[in-house]
Image 1 (tube, one colour):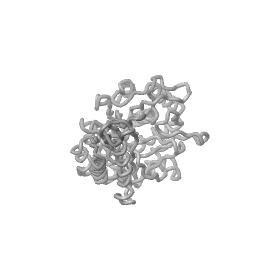
Image 2 (image 1 turned 60 degrees about the horizontal axis):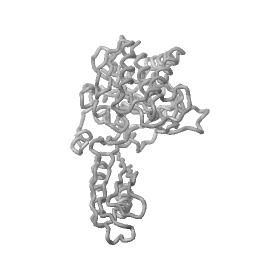
Image 3 (image 1 turned 90 degrees about the vertical axis):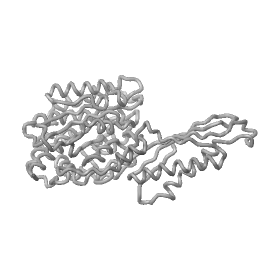
Image 4 (image 1 turned 45 degrees about the vertical axis):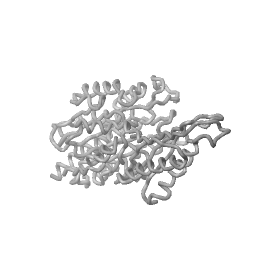
Length: 437
């Protein structure tokens, strides 16, 4: 998951614009009946066929061996297009440089989207197995290889039922989730215009295979970053009175910033501010300047605006108190991520499908996370539901490693579950809309 960072005008436009949900999203009938139960079980049975499961594993391992960073997913994109070609699925490409949007169905409304992100991380894989990353310094340590595989699996399942679809399903293979806001570029290029709703999955190593989790409303935070250059006057450490010490100014600024959450934020509103690095010089010299920075997280647009304003005010004030100057940057080249917000009705629809697929006890109510995901851009434009899907092997739960770890692994038994869930949520959404109309 990426949690980076648009100038204020663009973030306000993306977050504050009121996008009326279309009737297909609002009028979803979540009283799923026997037809949906039969459909869901048939999809799960198809996904668990030995030859299908073998194909899913081979697909995921091929993608895992050749990880590519944000906006560099050329081989991954080509691999996806080859698979779609083999299935006879039409697609739009390129979108946002390497993105692909496939289409299954007649093209008639409603359009329901399924999304998978494609990019990897600049991490050296330390897992010793036969399909270890072949690219030095790059790894699928956030499970995007599994996301692509599950969506390709769903594409196969859906394509086999294309003549029965009561609308259109869109397959969104998105670049650059890890910090570079690929979702926002997909939207800007118009590739998702006309979508009524979208569903997304993210692997979660702390839940066992066979479980999913989410909640209605905010499920993941918005995120932005900041960097600061604190400028002073250098000099020998033995004569500090002849200097303007930027280290002291930075120290006081870091302490003052902590009050933004503890003393200026309603304790019932989730916000986080973390100073994550300080760079200076070591030894017996007071440096001329010190660079520091970090991240802040929020669940509302108001939270974003307030934290951004106060971060700048506090740092510049502390600089002045210590006869220094500060240049504060909110890294406008890295677009801030808006919060990911689950539409209650799409969430409820997806939850009910999950309960049919996995059983009521295996669909969990997950707490909101202060981590960020650029799926939030989609939730600002249409009704969405974003779920976590368990990848933990119960026999190895004591040694589970989290996302972005060089030791990150998944249990590949999750792949058919994710493929079937994607397909069942999308097809039953179209079926439900047809009945409600």
